[in-house]
Length: 346
Image (cartoon, one colour):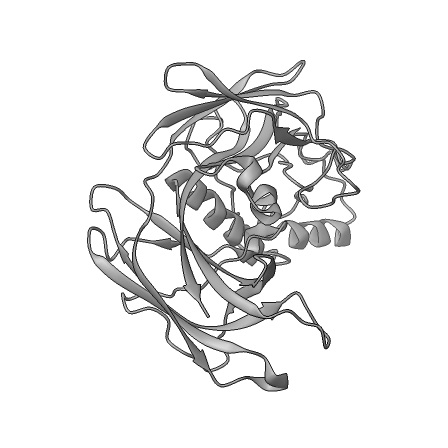
């Protein structure tokens, strides 16, 4: 049940929220209805359960103090624990965890504390919500280096996980061209991004586009525009931009190098602007940045499994959609990503 790197169906696993008990068996609801019509009482045996630590954390090559609030929320450490299958109580995160990050030599390079409130912040999640943690040593991971995450909670078996931070994406060129405005004069464009893929590694790319004004403040985001039914990419697969929101699971669109390993390749997409300003005093957008992230394989597998889980919502006949885990003696995932940014003046 708890082997590192193996998919599993958790009793109940908590990250930012409680995952509801569903799809225990594809025909569970049908079975209950049949039993009710026969007026027969049947006791379903509850699977044995050993409570274990559940956590998630994303390590990146950018120090926390240099990350945007969206990136901090994406990476933020969260700690909770599992509970019994038939226990329907809402479970809060744990504020009493001890979590450390170690390098390959065994030296502690990062420690975490319960997140603190900062002027009523809600993004990333503050200390008013137990379970969320913040880094204290402002550590930035180094691509190609190996790191171990270790966690402890009173009364639980200790957990750990290990990863090697991916190499930086190799951006060759990026071009943005303007398209005619859309409905309500919404700004639209087209991006073309060329990368050199490393043939010695398996890579999982995520591309995020953001707009900035003349003062360097965030102006808005680039979003893939499907309104023209454009075929994306030229390497035999679908490509779209990702977004780093607090509820990031559905906003992430990794692109694996399955068909282009070791080659130079180009990704392209029609895009539209999602801006943060409205009204007559709107500042002027000055440039855009395309950030290309390279995920670890475990992070890719977790996000894919999370998407499959969402795709089976409210379908009692769906196959079980287990979440991927790489936490030894526990549940959750420890993932990593390395990013490179390319700036385009508008």
